[in-house]
Length: 393
Image 1 (cartoon, one colour):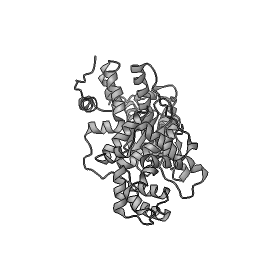
Image 2 (spheres, rainbow, N blue to C red):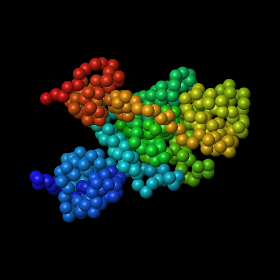
Image 3 (cartoon, rainbow, N blue to C red):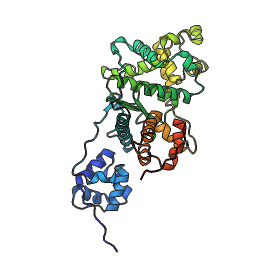
Image 4 (cartoon, rainbow, N blue to C red):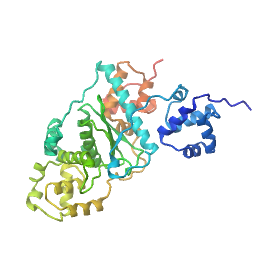
């Protein structure tokens, strides 16, 4: 039997990679089918894993193999501010799935910055500014004006996904990126944002309904504008303490952007009924359809506008619980999943750099995390052209 080759690496890199990935020693040992004591020996430097075992660890931690041969752990991104802690709903540590999505968001942002500068020679700008002291209504009115949102536009969307895609493109036109996370439970994360300039990032949870993702994007936009990106679940309490002000303000502005007070009170349904402590479900649904928002957003707006009671809002909220996409067997085709995950802005940046021979087809494959054979379909869908992707020698 040939002698197994040991991977002579710095043990602190194994500890760093495991901690950053959010795993315990026991969890990793189970994935490797080894005793926890064996992994502890590797991490202490008492023994070394084999090359094959190191490859398995790299796959588990979602790190390139080469990183384990560095002399010391590399500098990593700063942890995000956790607004979920305001509501007392944080876990002792983020799940490995959430940690991975945060790392991916930072990595894609770095890639986008490099690609943009290759094309433009300068950094992209994000210059949207608001003054919170003006209040939610004025802030929302300014943002609607910049984005070109009207009631007629919203009521003209054919379905929720068309509305979501429009809002996503509109926000990306401001100079930020919107990604979707697929591996994190809604109970842990509705959305998060990275507010660093240039190219701030918003990430929403694909397990949410499209209309719920629209609200999350706008909530995170307010955090980005105020340079206060972080992890959010968008909850709020009735009598919130000052520590919740930022989250409540973001919710108020997002709601006002989607359903402006001045438009809502003019709706024929609302003007006819006025204040009501028990709005009929079909009228709530009709208003939600008009603005392409969730029914919870409509009832919340009615409450804020003084057109219903908090008791009614809490009652309906308990009935609806969390909005989720309906389960679909099989899921979308792979090329559509890639487009949905990273968005057309990111894909255009990657493909335009490929056209100009700044990167290779292999780079395109790596940046989009998809095999070469799928790139043609993605390129046709996003760019409307048809080229062959062959690796340049």
